[in-house]
Image (cartoon, rainbow, N blue to C red; front, side, top):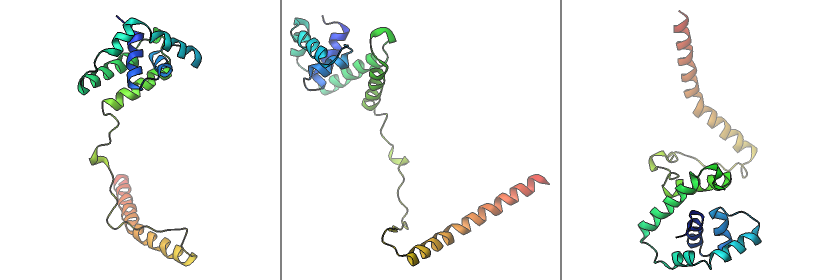
Length: 160
């Protein structure tokens, strides 16, 4: 039976397509690239790990659940489990992605207004720039005047 760290190694090894050095790093083993590669080599000849790698892969849903379970164990590991802060943060980020936390709901998307105009400042001459500036001022002046008037009314009514 593989240890927790060895199980993490197996999961990382399968998910990253067989990169042993990276799997060792993701599983929480410490060392430089050479040391991590050596640890990966040693792990890949251990019977428990070889057996775990030879097991048939689960269905897609089972694999998803297994990945989420493993990410949870990494993300919520105690500080003395040998995982650094960055590994824990990365695990939390991947867990959030797996659970769909980063999907932006369609109702929050802002669609451009129908009367949205594109004005290319780079290609405009000074007269066109001046005309566009005046147009913007006219478009925003009335709403601003209305807002200022409403604010003055509110301030005046509270002072009475």
